[in-house]
Length: 265
Image (tube, rainbow, N blue to C red; front, side, top):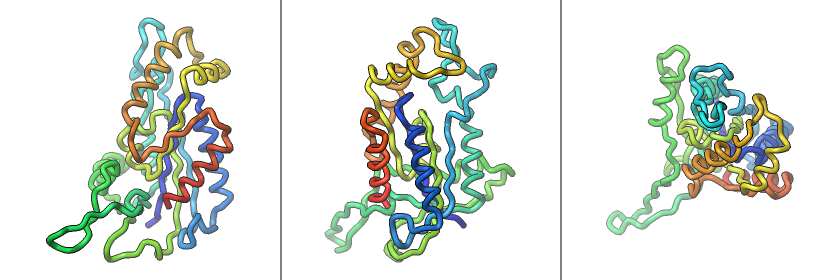
């Protein structure tokens, strides 16, 4: 049964999420079979999946058209084959696996139970991912349809000291512009980063890129940015998502993310 740490990287178009994901993948790959920030964690496998690889074909009947532009709306979840992405994620995780859940591992705030005289852990309202939640997806994305997969969360308990456990850990890097707008990919990620840019900087960068199919006139103003703002509002303010400034140098973003991962572990 393998242990996986799932790291999610999302962001606005041209914000630098792919650059960050590739830098992290290269760094982690170079440190395989070495201690991973902690003496009891040994880095094993590193796998990266990109949401952009799951866009539906141009001729898919599932696409939504923007009538005013006579152009496909590529900025929504229905433009992606998320079932296939989830299936690929489950193939990576394997038949039996353990999720290294950083939010469970972090020391929770405690409150004194005046009657029992013992400390009780409080719930993390943003840690929505749990065994029962995952089980719904295990059956759905099991190739055999048997739901025979099993999983668990490595988490703090009164009977086990996780700090002293010797763990061989795998990393799954997920990257995508709507990663945190899909319940499965959002809640699967133990560590989440989102890169944001203001409108003007994002538009300027977008003009320097060539897309296939290419943007039509007005697509950014009428679709890309409004859709980004809508999707960003869906998770903006969540305490478990680190929002990064995409205007600062990429090296600074990379170092901040790396240190944040180290702190969470």
